[in-house]
Image 1 (cartoon, rainbow, N blue to C red):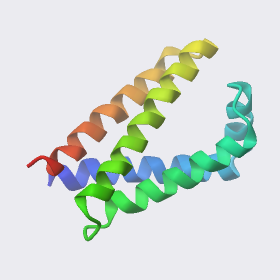
Image 2: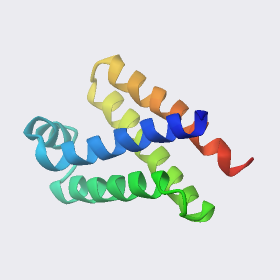
Image 3: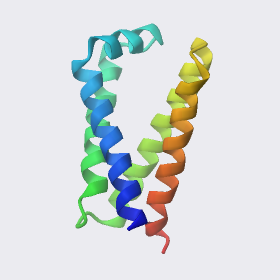
Length: 112
């Protein structure tokens, strides 16, 4: 039960974030303000969508899911560094830390 709740939260966040990277003008401008080019924003959106799908599908192998978890962790870490360097409010990094914790809880099923 804990696995499915944490994985559902993580996948939902990745999916919503990816859509925001593509459709929400405020997010698009925010990513530009952080210094990232548009092609990187699109690349991140595609990778987030892929990770969200891989994590939620039960028949995907553990090895593929490991890569999705690693990619998501790198995204959260990169977001923390970018927001910190940009001088953004602390709560943006707190949200990313919370999602790292959710990711760690979700990924525990791979080692069980």
